[in-house]
Image (cartoon, rainbow, N blue to C red; front, side, top):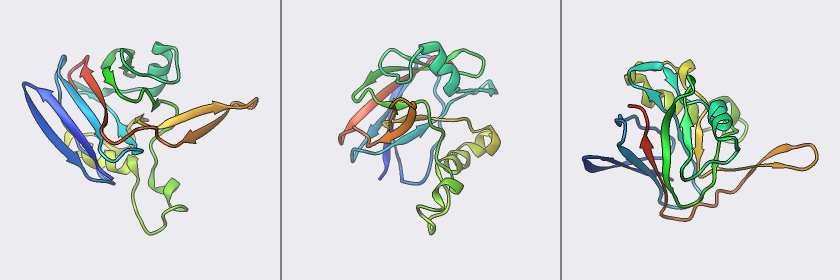
Length: 178
């Protein structure tokens, strides 16, 4: 369970992100990176910050609002807390990414995996900490390849199995320097 991230900034660089960990990297406006799902049915949590003003960061709520939808894909942008596009999806093999749920965290996982500390939020913080980001500043995530649905008369949220096949990828281009 790992993710492969390819960064396209002049030259191709590959990063393999082991399970239960995170990575931090910078891209400039117009540069791209890809997230590849090597085994299928995996989820990757993604956040982004404006590297010139770390208080401006990815916002799930503004992304839903500005795109006027609950599921984003090719051509859709991710928006910041200031309402600016920060990333744009330029290619997408699955078309299924969640923008309703926050990242898992240690207290959510304790009942399911009592012997495995940490969660996605904590892993994102550990990856972003060297950049000067505090744990409370880690926003809700774009949950890449995660299927979420609104079902029934009560409009209940439900998580489904990721539809990602091995090798599926999403390519994202920077709209701000991150």
